[in-house]
Every structure is written in structure tokens, then in C-alpha cells.
Length: 488
Image 1 (cartoon, rainbow, N blue to C red):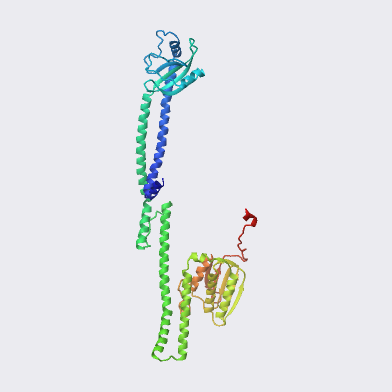
Image 2: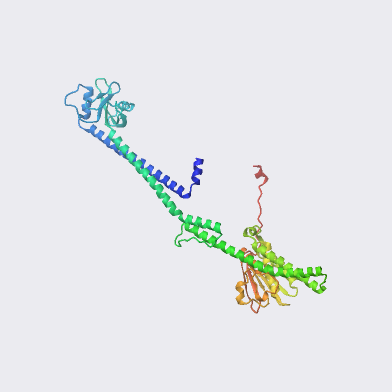
């Protein structure tokens, strides 16, 4: 069975479907055919039994046979002359009394003897039997009475040949067998045709997948009937959605690589130029003036810092959801904001930063959330005028950071969260253009939203909304079994 099962599983799906359909039809046809055969058999036997009962009901039949077998036969008492039925009487002991018109002798069985012993004249017993030549007959056994000469019970045996009935049943069985065979073959062919038609969309899907694997062409689409909602249509729509997502992901990846290369080119070019100046100075023996050398070293350090920051931002953006999900935990947004405020005050000591921060707990990755808040505050520090003010407020999960800088033009607001996008007015300032992209991604992963808008009176206000609670949830505890439980 295991080998057959393995071979069956290795067959193509359409072949398996055709075989299953053929097997199901074969089972149904076999059940119907067998049931039909038994029903017809029962009807034919009922007809034969009815004919035998009619013989018994014929006036004088039983009395004539009883006189024939218990007394001296008389003329003109043959009630069965010219018939093909078997007629005889049997006793508990002795030879049977056979009617002269009977075509043969019926073999008596224990069932016939039991009828005599029961002495029930009203109950007729039917059975299948054979005559002395082995021909099949249908036998009716009926108790007649007691022979006065030897005080033995006498039973009447009437039998009809079953040759015609068996011939009819054999022909019916042959017809049912032929019809069943034709039905099974037709069902197999129909199942194969239905399987081919039903799996045609799957073949198209397979061809599309093989085409993508061979050519990496993600622009391919499978035509789907918009009104259809079956499994194949849903599978096709899912495949189209998957290829669309993969194409978008590839496009974003290529765009990210191109943008990263563009952003890396500027600091690397500047860094290489400065290093070449220092190297040429060493090789030619012409020292660079101390002030210029100090400026070059400061520029190299700044470019290296910018490169490190850009690489860190790229690593943050390249992390997958699975890597993030392993580090998500309950985080105090109040503590995160206060830590970011301390760093912001160090970067902008000339600024006045006011803060009103209330407790709020969220589900997020601690380091990513702190980086996002730091990026928002860094932007506020970067664009605030000297001696300006930054207002920070956290109330009921809504964090607002307002600066009094030049603000963002209305036509640039839709692009502020795009990767590597930088305002033309801020291209001279340090930064990679990835800070707000990281903020948007982190906030969205935490289930929140972030927006930038014009602040009343000038400047920009950043608003971050994060779902959470004002109180920390109880820590998860692990219940260990007691000593008594362990003993069991």
C-alpha cells in the first residue's frame, strides 16, 4: 500500500483527479448495480413464490395429493397434469410420493422435516433447492396433515424451475457490468477533461512562476476574471499582488542603492581630496600651514562622522521586520523623550528647550524609538535660530516638537519623509536625508503616525501619535509548579 500510495502521489494532479473521479463513480455504479440486481432478484423470486402459492390455493390440489400419497390412487384425480412444476409429498420417514406429472424428484432437506415436526398447516416455507439432476428450483414446503395408515406427518413440496429466472439474472448482471464499465471509463475521461479545464489557470500560474524564475521579470501578470471569486482566481490575484510587491520592493531597493551611492559620493570625494592633499604634502616635503592643516583634519573628521552616520541610517533602514520583532517590548515614552532631550540640549546649548512630558508606555523597540525621537529633536535644533526656543510636549501619547525656525515650504511637505530627500535650502547643512524616513518607519511599526506641519507664528511642528497606556502594564511572570505538584 505504501508503494501504491507513493506512486499515486507522484502522478500529476490531473491524473490523480481523474483516477479519484473514476474510483468514486465506480463505487457509486457498483453500489447501484448490486442494489438493482438484488431488487430484481427479489422481484423475480416473489413472482415465482406467488405462482407456487396460486397452485396451493387451487381447489382440491392439497386433497388430491394427500389422497394420492395416503390411499390407493383414483382416476381423474391428477390436478397437476401438463405442468412443469415439481409436486411431491414427503413424510418423516420413507420415500417421497411424487406426482406422475412432476418432471423430477425434489431433494428433501432438514427444512422440510422441520415443517412436518412443527405441524403448522398455515405456514409456508420457501427455499432454494435442486432436483435429482442438480437443476435449481424454488421450493414451497407446506404441512398437509397426518397419514392415518402410519400416523406420520405429511408435507407438500411444490417447486418451480429457476432456469429462466437465473438466465434473466445473469443477463441483467452482464448488462450492469457492461454499463458500469462504460460509466467508469466515461467518468475517468470526463474527470480528466474537467481536471484539465479546471487546472488550466494553475498551468498558466506555473508558467508565470517558471518565467519569473528564469528571467526575473516581475512585470508579468496573470489575467483574472474580476467577477470570479473561486480559489484559482484568489490564487491568481495573490500571485499578481506578490509580483507587484516584489517589483516595488526591487524598485525601492534599486532606488535606495542609487540614492545611497549618490549620497556617499560627496563625502568620499571630499575625504579623498583632503587625504590626497595631506599625502602630497608629505611626499613633496612642502608642509601645509598649521591653520590649513587643522582645517583639513577637521574636514576629514567631519566627513568620516557623516559617513558613519549615513551607514548607520542605511543599516537601520535595511533591518527586516523579523529582526525588529525580536526586540519589541514595553517602553516608557517619557523616559525616551527625556533621554533625547538631554542629547538635544548638548547639541544646542545656545537654545532654550522647554519640556512638559507625562508618563506614557508603548510597544516598540527601545533603541529605534529613541533614535526616532532624537532625529526629530535634531531637526528642530538644526533649523532653530541662535537663541531660539524649542517646545516639547508629551500628553496622552501625543508628542509635539515645535521650533521657531524658517519652516518648511508647503510644496516640500509631501516629500519630507522620502528617503534621501533634502530641502534645497538645507543641502549645505550636515545630514543624510534619512532621519525623517527612519522616524516614519519606526512610528508606523509601533502602530502610530507622524506628521509635519506649519506652526502658528512661524516654524515647524512635528506631531507623533503612538498607541499605549499612561500606566505600565504588569510584568509577565512565569508560574513554576510547587514541590507537591512536582512530586506527583
